[in-house]
Image (cartoon, rainbow, N blue to C red):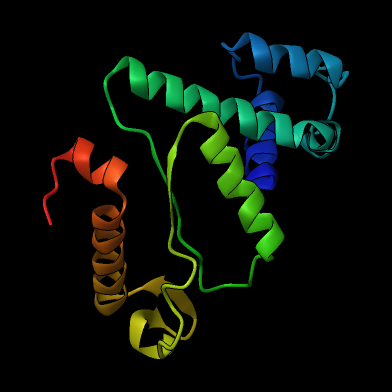
Amino acid sequence: MEETILVRNLANRISVGAEIPYDFISDIIQRANITPEMSMEEIESALVPFGEDLVTWTYKTVVNLSREREILPVWIFLPTFEGTMSEETKNKLINTASDAGFFTIDLSDIYTGQDIRQITVAEWDLHPNRNGHMLIAENLYKALLENPNISRVMGIKK
C-alpha cells in the first residue's frame, strides 16, 4: 500500500517534469532508466521494483529530519474501513517504520466489535464521523500512555 502510493506520487511528479531535489531518488530514476518522454504509466511501472527502497528511504529521511528539529518521530498504524491488509503486510510496514527509527503504535484492532455504521460518515463515505474520531482519539491516547518511551518524552503522566 505505502509502496503503491509512493510510486504513483513520484511517477506523477516525474511525468510533469518536477524538480527532484534528492540524490537518492535521482539515482533510482536513473537506475530505472526513466526518460522524459515516458508516460506516467511507464514511469510508474519502471519504479515498482524500487518501491520498498523508496519507502525505507522516506521513513529514514522523516526520522532524521524530525530528530534534527527535536521532534519525536511517531508512526501510527491506523486501518481504514475499506479493504483489509494482511497481517504480513502490516507487520512489514511496522517493522520498516521501527527499523527507520520511528516509535510505532499499532491501532489495528481499533474497530473490532464496532458497528461501522455508527462510526463512519455514511455508507458511501467510509471516513470516521464524530464517534469514529472519538474512538480513534481515545485509543491513541491510551496507546501513548502505555508506551513508556513516548509518554516520557511527551511528558504525559498516567
